[in-house]
Length: 300
Ligand code: NAP
Image 1 (tube, rainbow, N blue to C red):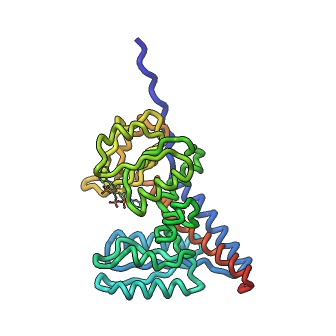
Image 2 (cartoon, helix red, strand yellow):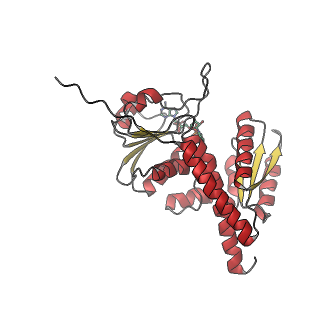
């Protein structure tokens, strides 16, 4: 009796290397804007409260901007700041011609209406892609800016030439920043999409049908290899701190999933680095659009 053939090792979707390539492309485009148009690309972060993860993310984004030749500023507010103060800062940045992208770091302190603040970001500066206009445009299939983590995952599929059209994609998670825009992006690329969430029944029965599985849950290693279809492409957006582990872990149990998948993102080094790279790419895109508008109107 012959045993079933062992699967070959999966392709490791290397977000660190891919993000490095994207950041180099961004740096080149930023340099072109500077030399040809005298424009320095500018990104502003709005940070309210002292959430340690948010403070770390904003610092990481600033460092990434500096390396790509993007000027970055931040507007920081204490936890007890008023919504009006944050809104005023957003409006001031909207009007600042040196700022091409605005990122409102979430979560905002409780009591602030995050949706209203995000909606105040000018659509042409909404490089995080989660303002009302950007999400609406994504539904229509023509968003200028798409939320950076989902956009990063699709970019990773594209750069590894993994097809989307006609595939059954299962997205676990339906948050506004991650699961929902990811489902829409995949739908816009002609995948057949199933979205799962905390009330989904028989999750494993559904995940086993996925050609592309996206985990965006926030539960360490909840997806195991036995929940996958052999040969599935696995994108793990999860980023979970687990006591006693020396690095953050994903929503997928990497060891068992890697035995079944044909391609998989590691954590860390998969989806995470792509998020910041896409933020930079969106920002330089916003600056290029601004230059085009100014050229058309003769303002530059
Ligand atoms: P979130 O807002 O908490 O959403 C989690 C989603 O998972 C919800 O839709 C929830 O369903 C669903 N869910 C929870 N338990 C489930 C279960 N047992 N079975 C199926 N679905 C379940 O989280 P998020 O902001 O989308 O983030 C998700 C993960 O991605 C986190 O680990 C986060 O750290 C990570 N993340 C990574 C990046 C990056 O750059 N790599 C960026 C953002 C987030 P309900 O809607 O029913 O509650």
